[in-house]
Length: 226
Image (cartoon, rainbow, N blue to C red; front, side, top):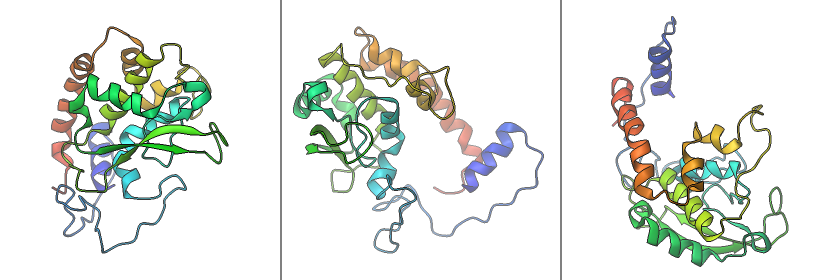
């Protein structure tokens, strides 16, 4: 939060007096906790849908499920949906993801799962999906890329079921003029890539890499922790 405050002041040109009291011994790039003190602190849910560290590691990708008709699980699931709607099993989705871009699956382990949501989308219906495991030796902090992982899941689902009504069309966060997925993602870039049957993973890399590299450069001036 301190780093964000510094960035807001600098990027928005805010005329405020700001001082950040930095934490001691916090090393977000060092395992095994990568910023979370494993074995030292208990996790307290900041939200009912934020039940643990796995959710925090995956959320940059799984948050996009809020803009889809797929079920988000507990914050660390790839697309899962009512079997009567999707008509596909999770194993087929995972196989398609591995075929399209195995490099985007690095740093985590995917497992086929079955569950019944108790509320919200598809409540009371048997759903199939993929659980993203980032809490075992398969987890590689630097290699795990949750945004690309979810983009890949959407792409695989679109190719398997071109007619699947994936994007939710409803008012989201007080926005009525844009689809929820475009608002969450920041632009229509992701949705258009998913819906374009000729687009391949390398195309999304090319679209995203400039922004990613410029952000890494921009944040250097406000980083307090390494």
